[in-house]
Image (cartoon, rainbow, N blue to C red; front, side, top):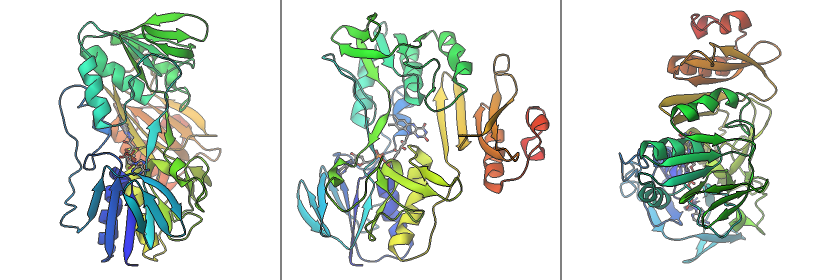
Length: 386
Ligand code: FAD
């Protein structure tokens, strides 16, 4: 291999070029990024940046020392017969890493809606979060809750509008325990309220109701950035379809991060995980695959969210597993939700301000040990002794 092109200069892209060098690849590497910025981290955008504690989140990586050709402000447009077309011309390659991430979904309407994906989005939103501003956040998911946290902290009057019957309802069945967090932070939470349109003066709900707002933030999820691969031989279905080696249907093309829909041996199903830890970890396997090594990507997915002064962490994959609460979310400030498989193994864990449970729980998910549900429900029993 003489030339590897990495498309997408986010975390997964920059980790891919580092991993290629770490695996001994000495040929040329070109890293292409549509944004004009050097690779930066996104989790702080809805935390430290919105809160005014940071202005830059650039990833600490010495691309010059790694001898990378960095093409910023350049977008990939298509892929045909081993040639990548970009807004700055065509590039031939022997290996290609697709790391183009995801784009926020926007709703219908004439009004201005902020989204939060880039550093530019974060700085524009931060400037709008002034004391007394009426802020409507659409979606009580992870990003919506973090935006509401920052807006309330800035002295805004915040309403979060959610289509489901609880926060994070699309992802987890324990969102009802998070409902009180909003009121405690002085944030109004409106549930079962799908939004019809974003208007110049606020929101119109599907039921005809109105919510007046000076600032509207849409946080209803993302779509993988793969439209540029339409018409190529790379198979697409909710992202780039890749196997457990992160290899697409085109052998010298791999995909990583938010845009990759990979096969998990551990969970026996496909997964597309839109979290930082996946963008960090997958590139090592993808680089090994391009180098002809037999590497398998099979992690226990992990993410965290910081909302209303709480640290929420999750590891595993809970679908189809039985919920066991560890502590009482209605009375305990710190609690956990565990999910057990039919044969009593830990499938997933979510912790609220119980970081030690998260660390031990993640190991238990990895190790597949059998657990005692009664001991698991007792928060005074150390998790690894369950
Ligand atoms: P991205 O970071 O999206 O990078 C992809 C890059 O590719 C972008 O720069 C994009 O401009 C570029 N690109 C797209 N199309 C093209 C093209 N055609 N040509 C060239 N370049 C292109 N995860 C957690 O686990 N915990 C958190 O607390 C958390 N907080 C978050 C907060 C925010 C505000 C956001 C937005 C995300 C958060 N995440 C969090 C998720 C995490 O940041 C993402 O999973 C991670 O950034 C994915 O990295 P990536 O490199 O795959 O994609």
